[in-house]
Image (cartoon, rainbow, N blue to C red):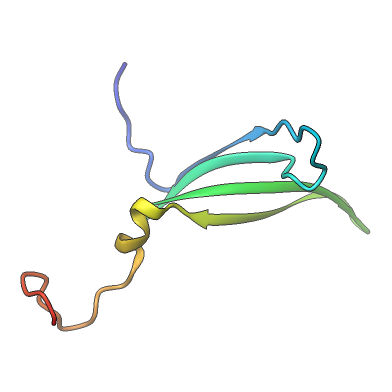
Length: 80
């Protein structure tokens, strides 16, 4: 199976809430500009009808890459 670029994409799947009604109705994973994150979404109802409300968490392995580079810094040196 061919690999494809998953940058700037996400997936959401129906979540088994089990015995905890506070768990998200949908869960998934995504990638935004090379940063991996987890996504949770809750189905809610407002004055205009049903909608999704969500939250995301950056995964630990990409948190370092998510930090912006300091302008004018040289990546080949290690600051002490």
